[in-house]
Image 1: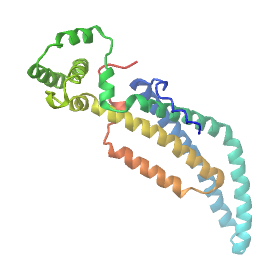
Image 2: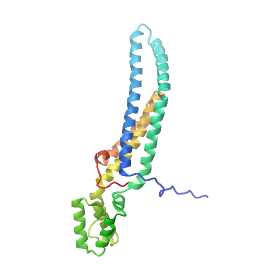
Image 3: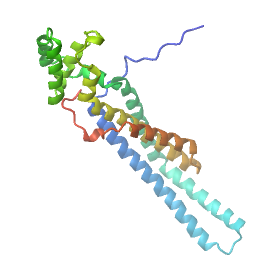
Length: 249
């Protein structure tokens, strides 16, 4: 039996926090535009329905249903045809943003991962690595407290790398706690942003499909609601409102 090739992971394209912030802002803009367009077209159909109902009151219910159905079907077909290019372009852009955000997950799997690469290659980080190479437990713990208090991510990244070489039971502080205190808020905001971009794209596609068919999908609505619940459970801030000390461009 042929073995399945593993999915590529090391080739996932890099997206900085700035990139993700821009993607979220753009996705929100496109999503709102699409929702307004669909709502406007549905509103026009409903207005026409009410107009026809009021002018065809002398017909039987069956006759009225037939006339209204034909008129609204023709109107909806015109609306779909006239809006197709703009809807398709917007959905294509949203899908591209969704795929980019999904790929970015690999680089934001944990606060630890984000802290470990912070300021990597900088001169100060290199100096700090040398300075704490032989520091004892008490000094490492004190420096960790300083890094948290001063929000010094560069120092925290160096301390994280240093304490990782100490046996787990002998570590003077938890590297995971350090990472969470320094970049945990940003990490949760990044995850929430990725999830929101995916939700916006999927919601736009669901709205578009409902307009095309004239029927909403309860399954899609439930799925979107569950995903929104999972995102809310992160209790994350809005990535657009969070400014990180040093960009990872």
